[in-house]
Image (cartoon, rainbow, N blue to C red; front, top):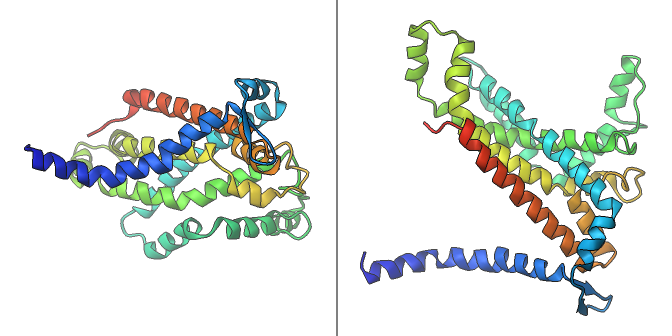
Length: 291
């Protein structure tokens, strides 16, 4: 390439590099710096060294929030096999009404989180919720699912999974339709049944898609905020014990005004996210098959 071609290349990627630097790298650098400072109510800051990180180690709320976030991340991964199952069913030859099914399962993806939270708050209501009404028909007494500290987090995780099933089903449908049909024809000629074809052809060739969706879902789980904030509310008895790390960051930084401490929480979350993602990329060499 000559100089003119190099110059055009740099010019083409300049907007991306500029956006990455301004909207991602600079905020990260600022958050790291702020995590070593202490802020006053009037906006001034003083250097605090490692005080915010020492406070993190002593704060029991941080341990609880990390445990809650870990539960959201792990249980949220259940959306991957669920989406594979739905995609496999929708990919069945001769199935009628596929466009209708696709519209229905994709509705949660295009619905605003506030609307989703309002609908599920009504479903989970202990007094007039539909879930408790259906349980009462079977003689089972329900409970206040999102007000009870023991069930609130799991109730929100169910909504979290439901929200993403449609999105990941679309991705898995694309993965399934990308598998060459002649592989199944050859397997059928060799006498392989549907189960053998699934484990020998479908599943191995879907592993890149499974890996991609699991990385996305882990990040979504680590960053979950809106559903918890909208479904619990500060007045809920479940508010104190069911915060995730992002919700704790919001509470400390924006409600209590401890911006330096909040920045330290954000830096810890970023470190945890990077570590888990690195482990995922390291382990994918052993089980992901790129055809």
